[in-house]
Image (cartoon, rainbow, N blue to C red; front, side, top):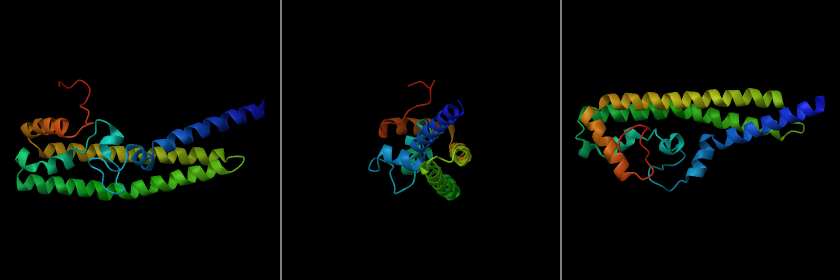
Length: 172
């Protein structure tokens, strides 16, 4: 009975690790493809990873003339984007390292389940931190725009960026 419990626990941890690895930023980038709009090097494509969390700031900066952004708004949005990128990069590196450690823990026979669980928990905390930083940057970016500019940005994003999804409950 004890062997069966260990086998079931090991199978569950392995399944969680595989699912977790498939949602990691490097895997999400590989699945999303690198050649589409917004792709730039190894940087995660936020709109692909998070669905409704489109790269508002980048889209706004690309369409600054259509949105009639002031020089102060442009400077603030660029600062928010740079700050987000600089804060997120080390966390993404940590996440890649932890994912490698998870894979290493699961390669052993028998797999080190205790180490795998600790690393999986650590990876999830890093993902949560990345998500929060993304939301924080988006909210800071939205606060720079006027209500009219935000509405215009939504229209631009949905018209010019295929695959952009509006938030549930928003009118078309």
